[in-house]
Length: 466
Image (tube, rainbow, N blue to C red):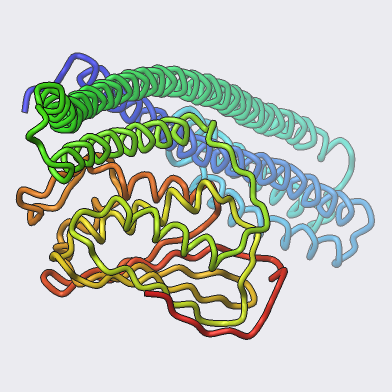
């Protein structure tokens, strides 16, 4: 599959965003590791400094014990001296282990150990002179001078070691601060760049979506225009065909009547006049259906419900249809229930029932029976038109109420395909419903339901009219 330029940009944007986020995460991980190491170094440095201070304090304590023994000859002071010197060795070893990686500090520790050994030797000499009774100032003065020099050297060494650790501590803190700043900067830049890239990707996706919607809208418009064009073509084809037949009949019958002489019988003249009337009536019905459907589509079909006598309406409708029925189908009217009057739009009801009855006549065999059944409930009025005609194929039922659609089993029976579309539109205006039950070769039944809030006039009656 060949990728478009926009798809490549989107894929590259996502890839670059993932790369930036991965890089930022890796750098953040490394900085976090370095911060942990720096924190450990700071901790170790504090431990070293604490140990250095502790060594100096121990030396001071040992010196105090030695002086106490020389001045006051207290054994407790001597014991204090020995205890301090014993603990000093362990502290120096611990300090040496802590500074094993620092060559400079190792040199200082070596120097410190030498000075401590020198101090131990001077202390022993001073204590031995005291024990043999030679504790005068003149005898102890040289040792005291050497001891002070040694103490100053030890103090200086410890001070240098402490200064070294403080310097390392400052370096660690500075590195930690730099790592934190770098981490924040990298995370900010990574987030900003990722957001900018994702925003660009979103813009491309949105642009693609808009283009797709525009293309779909154009495609839908083209499809609608094509469908409308096909609908117009079918409409004009149907109109031209449906009008041509009755017009030809009218013109032909009129010419025959104009050319007729006195030898024509009245029956023959009436037959041609009847053909003219029937064709004109068919054209009028077609024009009425087209006008009704057009006005319904435009939302201009008027709706004026009035109280009408249902039985009288149905009887008059049947008489109108039988008057124009050449094949003389029998239309039977059956009234069931207790209602004779209801609020309905007479024009809409006439259009609905006349189309259904006309179809029943058209698609039923000659001399066949057609039934118009009126029934009512407390909340609705029902009209049912039943015939024993050709029926409707199951696969066509989904297109039953679409304009200009006719089933494939109508054969040579003429028709416009508008009648049931008019029925559907009229029922929508009247908030009615239609139900179809049909079997090919077994007839068709249309049931119309008109909702009613109140049954105005009720009387018990069950009648039928042939």
